[in-house]
Amino acid sequence: MTTLIRFDVTDGVARLTFDHPRRLNAINAEMWQALPGLLGRVAEDSSIRVLLLAGAGERAFCTGNDISEFDTIRADPQAAARYNSWQRDVTVALQGLEKPVIAAIHGYCLGAGLEFALMSDFRLCAADARIGIPAVRLGLPYRLEDIAKVIDVVGLARAREMVLLGRQYDGEELLTLGLVQRMLPDRTALDDAASELAAELAANAPLSLMAAKIAFQELTRRDGPPDLARAQVAADRCYASADYIEGRRARAEKRPPAFTGR
Image (tube, rainbow, N blue to C red; front, top):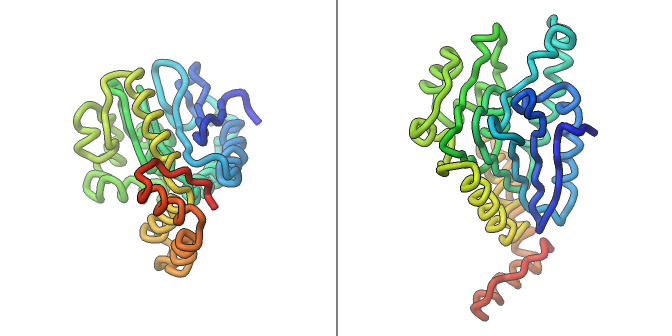
């Protein structure tokens, strides 16, 4: 575990906060190694229906990897391979999560911070958000799998621009590029909007959310054709669930449904 990540669960919403503000919430080795376990808790705990990602402090959501460690733990190809394996463990856990993920972005969102955002289903930001990929300005490669995430969101031409130039983007361009889906005027409004969205998602049928997440995962996978059987199993679970009965009953009785995930 680490003290640099806060994790709490309230009313079906797990809030994971990068709490390293002294380094603008950059992710160090300790944090990378702690994240798979926390994401595993989200995946396995049936009471958790939504994951909300946020950053502590006033200046940043997450500024990527903590480069202050690179001289000691990422200084050569062998060390970099080990470091990258920690990142891939997190990517596998987050991309494979069968529950909705929200990124609430304020301030700087760079490099690996952007990767977290791009792997989220919803990206909300405050007006002060600045998003970019600075790898070429640090002498680092931006990995193939990370470039793929950018292409999936902004398209090939703009992905080339973002990766090869290393610029930061802000303001309305974040919406135009599709890097965020909604912009709020300030941090307070962002936190409120993210909490409201999380509550709205948490009120939906968990098995239906899972089926939708699996469908999106299969339709966007790059390692082979969609696994249609996996998607169908998830859909069939919905049809066979008590929540499907509850949804129909609540509609007939003109009341909000009370879904249990069964």
